[in-house]
Length: 553
Image (tube, rainbow, N blue to C red; front, side, top):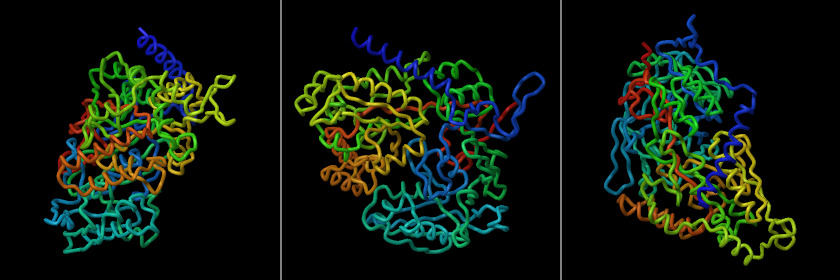
């Protein structure tokens, strides 16, 4: 009965917040739901009429940068992967598949990777940089990686790339050789991450931010900040792209995006809210597509903040949050679709090292009475106002969350309320997404909510001691570092998974996170979209395995 009551109370709090956010809209006061693409029109009968080969994608993530070596955002990656090549891509089973590279192999000692690339790929023309077709060669690959290896150029991949890569050699125009410092079991992942850029653009001080030029199937046309990015077909691509135009409509309010999808103003909405799942399913011209891997979401402590340096304090605060009920309240939907799974650790259960049973055995359980006992024992006792204090200092802080995900904002409301219930003065605060990520990187947060890092290198980036605060926010444990370092040079997958699980168990016991949930984001897709079996736009829309189009009859 107590559990049911708690879920109901949480649901009531969340519904109030959702109603408020729906009234507010976005920061510009424009709901952004009524435009569709440039080719979208309405006929005399009020029906939506679209250009035959125009794909309009509704994304809630704003563009943070279009400079390919400076981005860490999925929202940027959706666009950049259509404009640029990486050497390899990743399929739905997390296998690496050809992109610019056609084949690759590693030497027996695990230190040398030989990569063959396509001989029919050219830099995009008609942009003021290239007036005629210029082939992409192994020299361009070497230049790109050498450029990222120079710390003066500010590549966000510099640290991890420089630890791995010793040198890059051109064997012939279509063959490049990478020599690593040590065995790197994720070298293919690094080939998946790093975009190939034109040397001519660097030499001419080209404006990558405002005029990206790559070798992909779609060329950049325009970026209207907080509104849309427009791409057009690259007629010189090695195969004919199915689309004339791709438009990324930035619709920060996911409920507005769902309405635009139902009105057929957009062809895809990249993240469907739990409250909209039933509406999407009910339309015979739409379908839901779930992500194959749960994306990790967590409430994090700044482990260098004086309030949170003690693991026992972090564990006590974790005990005060009924995360099971919170996840139920946030993701419950009329259609009965599983949108999230409780996380007991930082590694998605579908990834190497993810182990629900072992993580749960280490993770603290909901126990607010024990939480209060620990806080009392640590000297944090309630004052006359009900707020805990120690040595004249209040246990008071802000829980910061970005403004691009209402599920996380709802989580912030629940966590702050439950911490307040045990005498902690925790205030939830929503800030602009770019500000939020920069604040985490610089350590300017006390407690925060973040998500992502569920790719193959996620465990290392979340748990390993970092030169920056993002995303581990000041956490450091030499034992965890040693296990992860060993994992990242262990070729055998089973052995590597075990090392990552062991590292995670220590991390969980240290409680730098209040482990929240793995979200299986639901993409709403028009049935008119073709060749889209792998429901991801974080992979090129036109490649050797697919050529995404639209078929409005």
